[in-house]
Image (cartoon, rainbow, N blue to C red; front, side, top):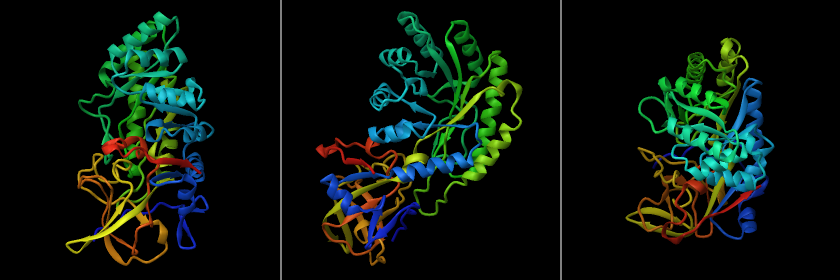
Length: 408
């Protein structure tokens, strides 16, 4: 038997069944008309933002990283909750446009921005986090051609990373950002070219649960921003400190100590160097804001026994939940939080694996977990499904198509 990941706070049972936003999972499935289905709780997202506001220094602005979940209604909800948005493609820019988000509240990072993406961003007043000298030159050329002053920042590849992070975005050779020692020269060139200088974007890593590691990285980030500003001889209007706040996915994971992170950052802010005194600071968070607010509901289609092992075959799978299947960068496969939604408060009775409907052995949502007895028609819930689920999974694989989504 393999342990299952910890179910996030905020979920309970009604008549023995999993409840999401005060209604049974089966009711949401009936309203959607089919499964599989992603259900996102607006109340849990609001609570997460409120907790962040309470824990972080008042002068810290909160941005939403659209890549975590670009579902339109969710973007509309976020528009009233966060201070800005961070995107990584022209497609995400179009999604924010459709949601009615002010483009001047948006910054655009990511290597390999195409000319059409640069033109769309510059023409709308989006801040471009330039990833190289060549990209900055192209953005300036777009501005000249359009007769528009581009808003340019520099994405910095720092000489450190976020210890214990799931994905390291800084330190050493990286396709992301400009190596720190080359930043001052480019900053001077951007200012001299007449662009609107927006400052720095410094992102060292993601999915960290160690408050001390995050606090140390933020302190290094502030020191780096001050050092680069001094060498460039330019102020820093805005500095994106990155994100990296993780959520518990796997057995043994403990929630991030948010207060410890906030207290450490407040201490850093209390003695900022002169060059950063007027800087507007933000952090960009994706999964931390929405990950635990989402549940993936999938229905048991068949129950079978093979060589003494029980398999619950569901109508969903890795084509919607690639990360839960262990195929999204996980080195050692561990179980996400998964539960039998139809008998959410029942005691476990058997060892079973939850597998999807795809013709591949990779399609496994829970490996030999301990569950109540399940039968065809029952609903299975995969938690922590609010981030990097629907949009980060190969929904077209084997012609299966996307899952339905609901913000409730």
